[in-house]
Length: 171
Ligand code: NI
Image (tube, rainbow, N blue to C red; front, side, top):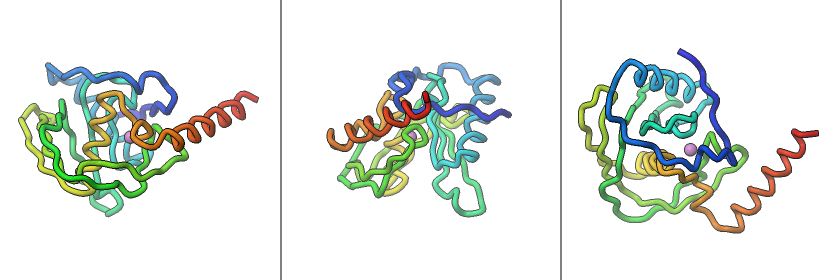
């Protein structure tokens, strides 16, 4: 297994849309294992393939990761087929958007269809925190970051912050 680099804003690859997986083979399993290792090391509670520069449709998450037990979930080709209600995520963050946390308007419940890593179809009904995580990760597969869903002013301040950081790193 290997640790992968996580792309960060404003890397253009993060704007890509993932392509559906048509064949589940050894090289795909290797990417999934590397993503899992990379997410736990970061550490994060979710990771999408786009964030590691891969455009196959994969998300992984473990929302219980602060507890000792790991319960990793792997979804291939996840699609939100239904949403219900509205909620505001509490201090959402992203491994690809360093130094920023923000509340984001999200659906309160979602139904997601996907395949597990062996290709078996899954249907997940999620509420609250898990619903937010699924929306966040599936957004990545559509080239969307959570900063695309916050106010223009907040986004502008963040962009300015990142530009400053980049200048600092150049000198
Ligand atoms: Ni993210």
